[in-house]
Structure formats: structure tokens, C-alpha cells
Image (cartoon, rainbow, N blue to C red; front, side):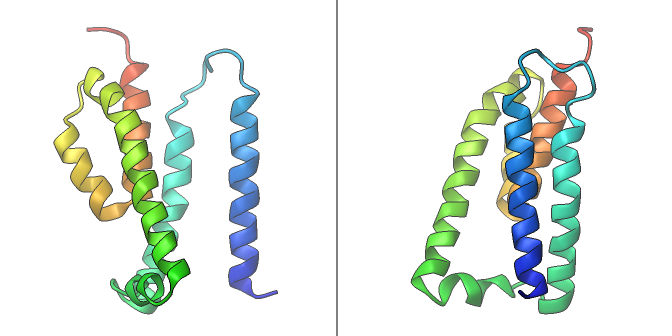
Length: 130
């Protein structure tokens, strides 16, 4: 098994564990919940930096456009980002965030931007009213 396969499987296992853990939380958590999406976004951003360093900024394009599966993964990613943004943007606006700024961040950074938007939204929601 290659290193990339091990990393991919470890990422899948970590995501599955985190999602199962979240589903078991019955009450609102008392600890700073905004740290969860931040903790997920940081390693993803770091790995993106490694990928950009090794294969340049546009290195993903031939991978995504070179096969039917690549295009499927690209459209899947775009639809998931759009759905996530759609579900999050009303909460973000209610918390006082400007959606226009965040749509640009999500468009250019993908899941990293969406996770940071979620972290900021949860952080603002947990602040006492002014």
C-alpha cells in the first residue's frame, strides 16, 4: 500500500470517527465547538500547501479533467461546497458575517474556506449578546 493510500484511508477513518462522535452528542457542547472545524481546516490547508509546493498551483486540473471519475469528483466537490454554503450562510448572516466575503473564500479555497466559515459562525454564535 502506497503512502498516499495510507493517508487517504487514515483521513477517511478520522472523518468517519468524527462524524460518529458528533452524532452521539445529545446536548449542546460546553467547550468551544468552533475549534472542531478549525482543527479540520488546518491540516487540510497544510496538505494543500504541500500539494501546491510539490505539483504547482494548477496541478489538480489534469487530475480532475483527465477522466470521467476526475470530472465526477470535481462536480461532487462543487455540489458539496454549494450545499454546505447554502446551509451555512443564513446562520452566518444571523451571526453578523458578510456572505459575499465568504463566498469568495470558499470559491478559492474550497473546503478550507467553508470550514473556516463554519468555525467563525459557531464562534460568533457562542458569544454573549452585546
